[in-house]
Amino acid sequence: MVTSLFGESKFGTFKFGPTVQTRPRFGLAVDWKNQSLFTGENEGKYLQSLTVDRGRKYFISADGTSMEPEETGRLSAVLLDVDRRFDLYNEASPLYGFLGGGKYFRLRVRTPSGNIYRLMAGSIDEPISYFENGIQKARFEGTDGWGYLRSQGNQVTIPLQEDIYADQAISKILEAARYPSIWGSDLGEGIDLRPYFWVDGRSPAQVIHEVAHNELGNVFIAADGKMKFRSRLNQENDTITLSDNDIVLNSLTRMSPAEVIRNVLRVVAVTKTELSVQTVWEIPRRLQVAAGETITDVFAEFEYNGKAVPVKNPITPVITTDYDAFQLEDGTGANYTADISISMYAYSTRAKLEITNNGINTAWVYVKVRGAPIVNANSVTFGFENDASIKQFGPRPFTLSVDQNLNIARQYREILANYLTLAKNFIFVDMIANPDVQFSMELGQIVRGEFTSYGISQSYRVIRLRHEFVDKAGIVTKTRVWLEPYVRLFSGVQIPVQVPFQLGGIA
Image: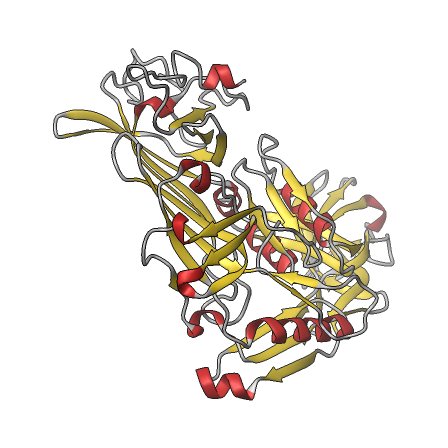
């Protein structure tokens, strides 16, 4: 559908005298009518300024307690709006009634050579129309799929799962969060089987990162909106080579050892064990249920030794075994147990009960829930300290807790020790304005860095991209790229998995 988006009237040849297109042309398509499709209408022809920022800057979080999650990708744009097309209150606008927030968008660019590259997909807030220096303009602010997932707060709940891989867990999270099908996903196979997995009222974005990082895998959102996951075993080749000629003079910046080195490592294996079936919840006092009444707001919060726990196969309360009902609150008087029915929907660490009194008398009901609690076994910590690195850079701690068995956790310690304790060239560079280079790069892509002026010759993973208009027409766009060393590692631990390993980003 290139002709509809980049056609003669909207986004096509744009001849300037005898010269065919001499600058990049940006295509900003918005699904104003919430139909999960784009009509070909290009809002990019109104662009006055544009900033796109996606990815992450670091491998390890600043506090040294986790791997760095990818930030919410952001689009910020100013559009010329002389006819008040984007004015929410302009009834003459063809978009009147459709300018609310949460509309899907996609941003692409066509270079002078005719190549088309994706830059970002996501959803935009309600446009803000305003005057500036006597000119009507509109501001667009948008976010990628991470914004969608983080906006849900602690809303995702997934019942207890057994023997599940990371890609399967992420798929369930996306399904529970109703991740838009217009974006979709591309999930590579996970490699470490998790015996138990559950989510109970948590942020989907946070859990997705935890699942990926729990096996030293990586996750990111591509420019087309797809959620992508790759395991640490994924192997790739360089796609393009960047040299001194591709970057602005003196723009290459190395990150400091404080940002990238970790030389005091702890990997904690937090394994789980399943106990025998037992009472995991009981109502503290009898509940009054009137004749013919159904109570639907009772939640059983599962506990073991005073701590919330997930429960395997919680049993719907059984008459007389798990519940009874009597005439009086103290459990005496006439027995109305036969009048009571109870249904239950189990989550992971809790269950919702519905209690119905089918009789003609008010009853006082006692109820409990049984099941097999899943609890933490004794944790085991594997430590490593690199004395030479500590002497050179000072102690830089990192602790990673994983829901894995002991041998896998020890393997992780070996991998991280090889990767984190020595100085490496984590860098960012400013690109020379060359559209077919600067716009061709994507998060997770492997590039070869041949920066001879800096003594650098190695492979990198693109982990962050920032594009920003220099001029109102977008003739020149400033691009900054964050690059993370791409290293294939062998842990030295004999385990039944494929080697070597790779770190340094996502496919």
